[in-house]
Image (cartoon, rainbow, N blue to C red; front, side, top):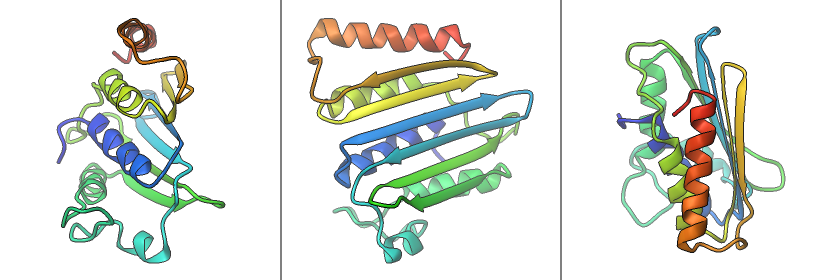
Length: 175
């Protein structure tokens, strides 16, 4: 199991970039009243073949250079352990959507605490890719859009994006 759910989001988004995505959207919803935490990563990459979709949760299957693909199997195991669920859906015209849902208060659910760092890693690790991030917590919403290929990646821009992420997440109580 990964220590933080944000690491699963990072892994899924990295897979999307590897699959040729030029746009990746991350949506997180924390709802304590309904006892639900969900996240969804949607991309416009090459999508998944029928075989890839069938074998996506097999830890000994990967489309990359490594011999194992543990990200999705570990996420599926974590979701199952917490009475949650995982969905993987190819999108018409290309791309994939991966969604996970968990009981918010389940004792075995890993925390979701490093989203600012996760998004910084994605945005500045792949500045050519457009990233959208929307985080809703108990009805309060924060979102940010990185246009991809525009805006530069100099120190001032990095600090501005970091500040925006930290302040926005703190404003909705998700820091």
